[in-house]
Length: 152
Image (cartoon, rainbow, N blue to C red; front, side, top):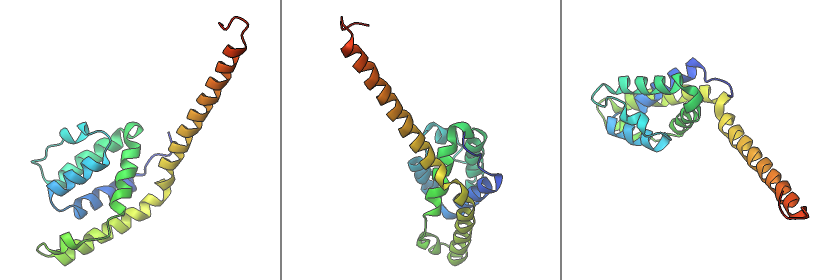
């Protein structure tokens, strides 16, 4: 497995998710679009406080990083792309909420820098495996066609 995601990055993700998505319905919608395993969301107690939901989710993903590392990186990356905070500015103390969310995203971006290439490297490795398999199959087929009986 590639390098493990640092605890500071995990914490920054929790903070950013909590502050950027003020309402649980917005958070749930965002998460359902980002996570590859929808079963993870169904295990969460959506009646709990939003911060607790985020902590439970991110801790579960981090605890099972060998399975969910790409989901964690995608979550981090997608949250970092948020640049419009107008939905927060409409709330009570909206300017402060927007500023806090923006600061949390800035902190997450700083943590994400070391992990942005992990997903790309895994995709490249998968592509190399696929190409190697195709080359082997091509060699195998060519041996079949050169067999005197056509059967190996």
